[in-house]
Image 1 (tube, one colour):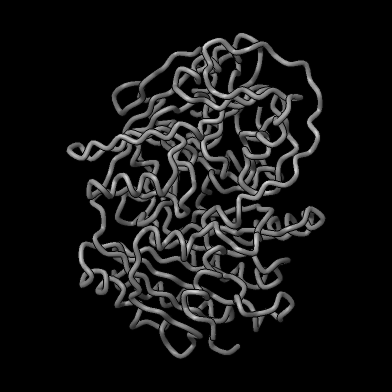
Image 2 (tube, one colour):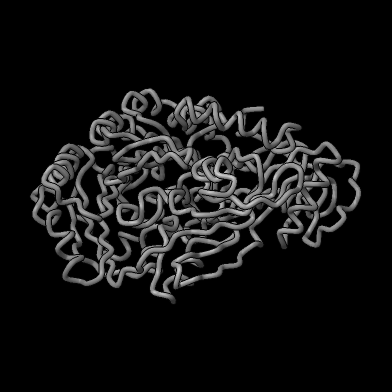
Length: 500
């Protein structure tokens, strides 16, 4: 395969849509299917936000909008409430409890399983709750769950601060942080983002509004920090620890043939053993070369795309952080392409690396699964041959190194791991569902032997609900179930998809 001839920006932008941690393609909505008629429920006293009932005009469009990609689950809540205030949430939960309606919750709708869409019951959409308050003296952001990644970046940056936000600009922070959160510059920002939650406001099953901190309702605080999409309450506000904003962001990119994956992983391992990973964020992606036709043989089309990000207080320090990579085998004779020490701001990162704006409107249907592991290189080696047989050019495998995740006594997040490895099946047509789900499923026995755990926000629960318990240590899973029985004894809230 010859060296890429596209202009660098165009090449990287084409690759950008393939490397998002959970998001690829436009938020396109298909033509709404006819809604099944149902008996309308009574008005919900005290709710000022929009209420749409199944069988009413506009229901199906609203239902489909609850999930970002085109593979819309065929699950139909009786009522969808778009909350405009915490009071709306309280009244909606009280109404549901009084009328035997199970409650599901949505903040941004970017979980590929669509766990907010359930059959029957009441769905509370929090996406309109977007308030941000920045306390620069205390270095705290108090946000509502519908706040999006780029919104918090910009608000905090105005105060010289930042947060390890999602790698895509439009991801809602509610579900992202509750599920762990793999955010920008995680090595220098406390690891997974959930550990930067320092307080939460929660509407419980009985309608009470409780505060959860390390000292106030500490069991709820423990649960909020890592529980994912199976929480037994509605988080209406999060207090997040902020960090000093970087003055400089640089990135170096290297493209190697897929056959050279061991060259890439050996280079990263050598840098790690030398203690030179520092606070850099290395990402490695198996993907399809943007210039290669769909039907090109794997040895010509499949590549290993490595990008290392450095967030620092000066260009000198950022360049020094990236220098070990420039001196490694990543930049050697096996490289098809390299672009080193490239400057970025956050807007540029979103636009050029993790953009939703795929002009071809690709990546309509989506499924993902993952491992958290301390054997990242071995995991990638095991997956490489299977990846070469991916059913579409948009399928990819992504590894985030230098994770440094921790287990804390005040968090249900359960794993100490150096690397996240995610396998992403992405395709256009419903007729290809079976082939893509099969390809994704066949990755599991290849990567699971190396797993220390799993990232709860990115597992394929539609076919494998048993993976939810595997996202936690046994003790933490059992404690979560005990807390659910304690705080939601009547089962007002849905549990994890596939679990009662």
